[in-house]
Amino acid sequence: MLDGIKGVVFDLDGTLIDSMNVWEQSDRDLIESYGHKVPVDFFSSISGMTGIQILEYIIKRFKIKASVQELTQKLLERINYRFMNLVGEKPNSMKFIKYLHDKGIKIAIATNNSRPLTIEILKKFGVYSYVSSIRTCGELKKPKPLPDVYIYACRDLGLDPKVCLSFEDLPVGLQSAQEAGLRTCAVKDAFSDPYDSLKRSIADYYISDFDQVINGTYECLTRTI
Image 1 (tube, rainbow, N blue to C red):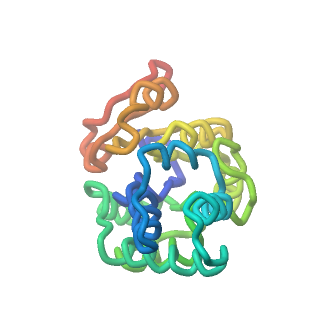
Image 2: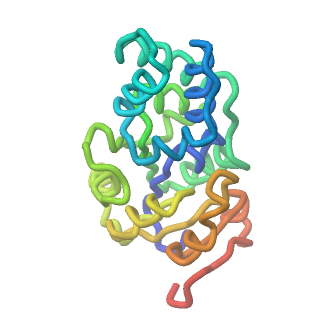
């Protein structure tokens, strides 16, 4: 998988860290802190909304007497606590980052998460110094599956996307990387299990543990590679 690869660009949530339930649990905690139960249809109702739109929806639906700014602060406190205290790494992900660094392969992050939190997470796991670039969809205002976050990450590394490899846990991320011209490896994650077939149809490779890249036991999904 790494033959000819000079740079690797990682998604963060669900790819390097086991964090995809953080957002749902934080929303749930916030709503319950105001004495409300979370309806069964709540998370389907907010699908596709931006963070601000979700908070506005919470205020309106549950008749909460608080501003968006107040809810933002309370939600961020819950999110940050979970990320820094409860979230673990995906199997051997940090070991793999160190492995790439030792081989002289450049490393970047392309994430929907915020830059400050991304930096803190990388520092928490001791790999921040190995990362040459962090690009966020929020800063670019170009969400995945648009390719911009990957295009800019490869540009930061000074590399053609054709010699870069991406790791992603969601179909939209794989589409983003593929559109930018990178090779793609899908990472198994419980949150995205319902989309596993779609992930496999997009990606060049598939893993459930980053050690599979090191020892060569990954799945190759395309015959042209």
